[in-house]
Image (tube, rainbow, N blue to C red; front, side, top):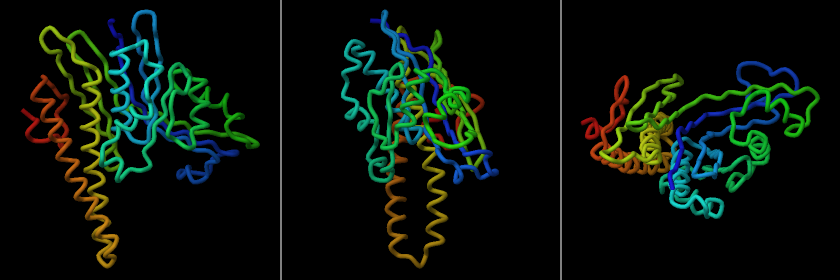
Length: 287
């Protein structure tokens, strides 16, 4: 059965609710309710069946990987989609590095506004938002309408920020992926196009997995900078230093794994970057 996806978008979203006017530039500590998550949206269509999917998660790479796994699972058997073992699937989206050093990782999954799975302990607000949105965009108007059910305050004020971090689109000759990253507090953008192999179509999920790997490599660079500063400041704290050194070793191992995956993808597919490949792209993958 033909599978129609079309596009996939990952948003970084943060919504802050206040009692009355919010106090200034550093808003979050004063919020009565804060909803932060990465939010992936896409529609799955096979025959007459349509599922408007939302995947929410704590970090970009694992949320994108779970989305790719959902794409593959639906393609394999659309009729069994609602019966999948979501707990196992979400566990498979986490790497050994995630499990060891990102224990706060969580996922929530929705189809047409109905919750299928969540590993997030405080998902009640997100559940209500997704029930109302039913896979569409989360707008400020929607949030204002839901505010009385989300928070008990005298006068609700809210701030809703939503920024697309990854946008993927299928086209006649492959898949294009646009990426917006945050580097040292600033946004940086690039895109890449993966060409269809001869007489085949590149799977959108395969491009999602590669984008997740690239994003995680960039994240590791950012974490490495913070760890280096921490080590420099903790010269007298042997226990803290030992813990940080374990993290550095784990990051190096994970970076090598990701570099191998990206290199293998470039060896198997025709990939073009605009305006240029990201600086952290493994040298062996540059072609």
